Length: 94
Image (cartoon, rainbow, N blue to C red; front, side, top):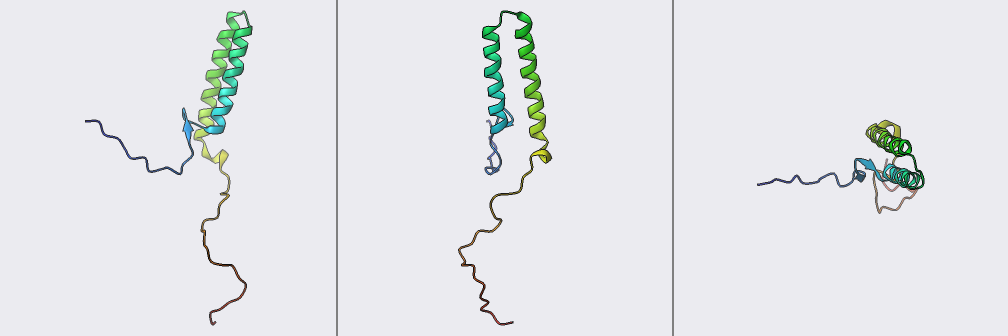
């Protein structure tokens, strides 16, 4: 019987084909541009070069996505969220 692993890392970034959403969108723009080049070109060399460029772009984007230190940003949200009113008054005794 096939066994499925529970996905516990729900808060990690979403990936499509191993790329984050922004890099996947960049890849799709490049694919659409290359399809337009293929449609409007009449040269077999252009078709082969477009496929090679798209493969190189995918490999480079997947390597960039795996290197997390280039894309580390500070968190936008605070670490602790509370409903406690922030006040400058100190009610406890020192």
